[in-house]
Image 1 (spheres, helix red, strand yellow):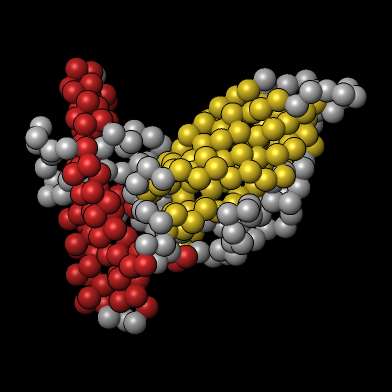
Image 2: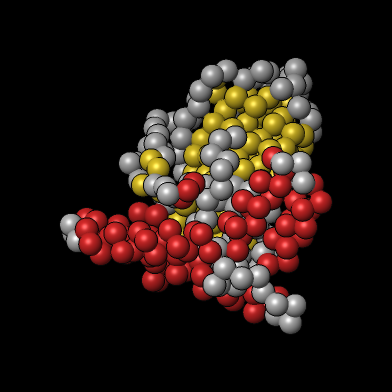
Length: 282
């Protein structure tokens, strides 16, 4: 079912994170305890917007109208996913099949998905003018839809990669509760060892409400990351809307010299959304 098929996001309950060249651990941040072992989820997602019925909004539509329609369609989609799971668990397979067909139709008519497909096809066929036109349309109907569920940024040789996912089993769309998890890989490509001291997150929901979150270290640790090694962890963030975004920075310092000043390492913006794209990895 397109890239929106259910997946299993494992290892969220793994042991404490370790710093090594090849692997890391997983945990939770101050956003709240996360014990999502074995959770079924949707694929990670780009920011989604739309106006319903598979048609682009007219030029007379205001940004607020488009945003409201986008929220409404996102909430409807999340509810359908939840209802299909409930029907399947209760062995009402006829109802589950009916909802599945509704979801398939939704995906076919969703403006964001349709324009993404057209962009991909145009690029593959080297119709770059058409691709640019579709991209402009996508920017018009869904201004934030070009933001991916992954991000990648390097500061002073410290690379931070992120991937987010929607945790369907921990969400309650009917109550406006949406639960997202994200996985972070920090790779030290410099020649000096660093220690992660503090984190700062900027979380923005689909209504434009922004929260700043500060904390010591990550998952209760202030890890030291040696040159050419990586540290990985997973955490989670609840949201009151089915779409949003996160960005921020880590405060770090070099530990090979006494009195070294700390510096900030950028975490590039990434999407929190229920709608999937084709990019499942870092």
